[in-house]
Amino acid sequence: MKSIKCAAAAAAVLVAFSAPAFAAAEAAPPAKPAKPVAKPPARQAKPAVAPAPAVSLTEAVSGNLGQVVFQVLLGELALQRGNTDLAISAYADLAARTRDPKVLERATELASFGRRFDVAYETSRLWLEVEPDSMTARQTMVAVLILQGRAEELGPQLSYLLEKDKAHLADNLMRMNRMLARYPDKVAAYQMLQKVLAPYAGVAEAHYALATAAYHAGDQKGAQAEIRQALQLRPDWEQAALLEAQLLARESPAAAVAALDRFVAANPDSRDVRLHLARALVAEKRYDEARKHFTRLLAEHPDSPELIYPVAVLALQQNDVATAEPLLKKVLVSGEPAERTVAAFYLGQIHEDRGADAEAVGYYRQVISGEQFAAAQIRVANLQVKQGGGLAMAIEHLEASAVRYPPARVQFSLAEAQLLRDAGREAEALALLEKSLAEQPNQPEVLYDAAMLAERLNRMDLVESNLRRVIVLRPDNAHAYNALGYSFADRGVRLDEARDLITQALALAPDDPFILDSMGWVMFKLGDMPAALEHLQRAYRIKPDAEIAAHLGEVLWLLDRRDEAQQTWSDAARRHPRNDVLNAVRKKYQP
Image (cartoon, rainbow, N blue to C red; front, side, top):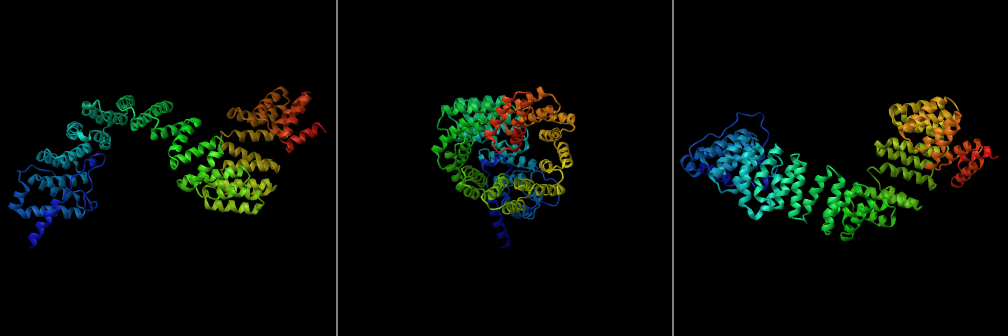
């Protein structure tokens, strides 16, 4: 009875062997055996497939049932216990002796899984010799050859498979590069495919496969030539158009956009290519053109999330709130989580701009993560103060937000200091920033803001030490050089040093109007009135700021060009009627 049960078990194992599918040869090693396998503690001696007299499984079973059953059970039990090498050895030996297709298949499967490709090669080769018409055997052989990198043997096998399955030629050609993804030598794979696919020069998919292989082999020109040939054979093929754009974009994004544009012009109903064209135009900052394509796509697919969001953002960039707002509300309901937070932030900005502060706060509070989280919560705090909720409530909100999102703690501290400064509580604001610096001393933004507060409190030693520390940490920070130089110039001290500092700032930011103003002011203090006037006039042309106007008017006045000075002050006063610096200089010269 026991022998019968053993024989039945062996037979069940043998008939359960499954042939690998064609897709299994595409990119990965043959599939893991059905039974779980644990990693063996150590590799045993490598088994080999030794030549043996051809004995069919039927003959082997009838002549030596016990030995066959023993080897089958030995292999399966070894597999169960994680001894992959023993399982491979048992099946490889049985396969060589019996030459049975099912045993050969199982031996190949186990050898491939165990990464014994030398054994897998021998068993798959023997299997194909036994069953030369078996597509499964040949497909398995292809998978093994790919993993071993045997290009010379692989080419004829691929040619055979393509020739024998003409009904699925296009699909098989498109599958070709996925099959070769694990092939180690990309150049050899490309050269091999050129030979294999030579008979299919009139098939677009063959050129697509060659274009992909050429790309992976580093032959960009060859890849572009092949994909152009594919498009000539199939001018409306979207997948080929997208690959061509991908290839062109590596050298010239503008050329990729032009290729996509040509394809869409010839194939206006091509949704995927039009979508890629729109995205490429955004990357090139050609927003008007991008929006036209997105708008058309959205009209054709009004509920597509991948279209609603970019159209909304593009509309915002062009200040088209009427288009953007309803789309953002759709995103807020059905978009991806990251898109929903961005939509909430933008909706908050829209409502804040129109003075609907309560609604703006409601949207900002929906920004619960992402890059906009800190900015949104800072806006909530500012609006709380504006709405009369009180400074204490706003500060509490900022501190709670900092606890919730520690990476933005510096931003929240700077925002809190700004609220205190706006409330006239400069000393408290400075104390807050100094506390932050005591915990993390190398924060350029905090050092800079603390220096500006210290200047208002006439703590010039702290101004200088902080700004010099910023310059050490950020030697390319033009505003730090400028602020330190201006602080000297405005007090009329260390003027040569002030000029040198502002000269360094101008070298970093030659068109910054505030740095130009500082240079004009230090030249005024040094008595070089022509140079002062030149810099101040240039600064005022770039930005007609109230304080720049105050400085320019003063220089004009002292150059006895008083009508121009008065006109400059009057124009600035109409735009900035409450600017203290401007009003002070007007009072000084027009009592």
